[in-house]
Amino acid sequence: MQSNKKLRMTCQRRVILEELQKVHSHPTVDEIYEMVRKRLPRISLGTVYRNLEILTKLGILQKLEKTGTHKRFDSRLDDHSHIRCVRCGMLQDLDTEPRIEMPEALNQITNFEVTGYCLEYIGICSSCSEAQKE
Amino acid sequence: MQSNKKLRMTCQRRVILEELQKVHSHPTVDEIYEMVRKRLPRISLGTVYRNLEILTKLGILQKLEKTGTHKRFDSRLDDHSHIRCVRCGMLQDLDTEPRIEMPEALNQITNFEVTGYCLEYIGICSSCSEAQKE
DNA sequence: ATAACTGCAAACGTTTTGCCAGCAT
DNA sequence: ATGCTGGCAAAACGTTTGCAGTTAT
Image 1 (cartoon, chains in turn brown, cyan, blue, red):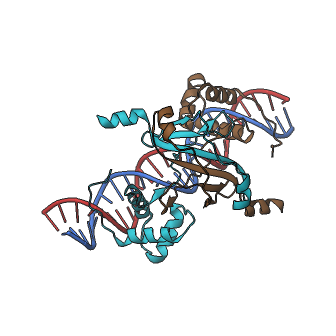
Image 2 (image 1 turned 45 degrees about the vertical axis):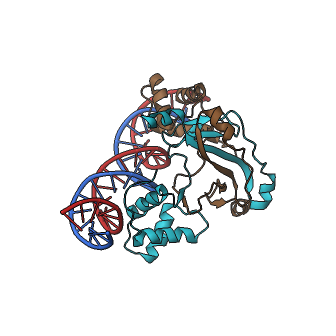
Image 3 (image 1 turned 90 degrees about the vertical axis):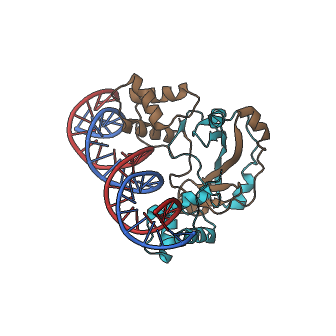
């Protein structure tokens, strides 16, 4: 799984990582870019994207929103869970509903009006893991 | 919450809805466009987007991937949950981890190699609900 | 010398928008 | 007549990529 490329902890890479470790929010790439630019004014957005991707592949960062970039719509209206293949992006309904702690306590804890949830299991679907064996 | 516009159930709107109700997968907009185009060859992609959005606002459809379009990265590596404000998009960690049914049974049920999950509660954060009152 | 890396700008794919004509009320 | 709507094309947006020059080994 590990790449065989040699990795250099360049200044840009280190600063991106440090800035991301500094905050507990989950900044978007643009926000990260702005944070990093205060220390490295000449860094480019492309470099930020590239390094975030590399650091994620190395397991040093985690990408949130594993969910794809395409919008998807559902005629089923209740909260229900999905499972997504990280390889091919396939998304399917989960029929057995996992038990989710009811959000009532959450309202207090988080100070949100919690209106629903969005649970996706992530994994590798059978056809992708078949394909891998070839 | 309901808009005060008059809604016409036009042909395009109806076909989009019907096609979406026909399938149990969660097609992307592009896929929906192709499905609808078989019945209405002259429909435009913009119309599909507009109507999906309208039908969602009316509560007839549900938008999956409520999660934003921006990539976000996290230096925390464990699976942990988040809560997102649907108004302002703010995303924050959830400290109290809800109990998620362990994915072991899931492997069998879904035929996936389940590797993790992604749980987001959705709601309205306190500053947004304050702002609303004004 | 080689390979990894950066900045820049262009390209890309998805989604949104402005405009005008058409249609229902 | 009014106002919601659709088709089209252009714009906008976030992200990725190609290239040429730089840096570390």
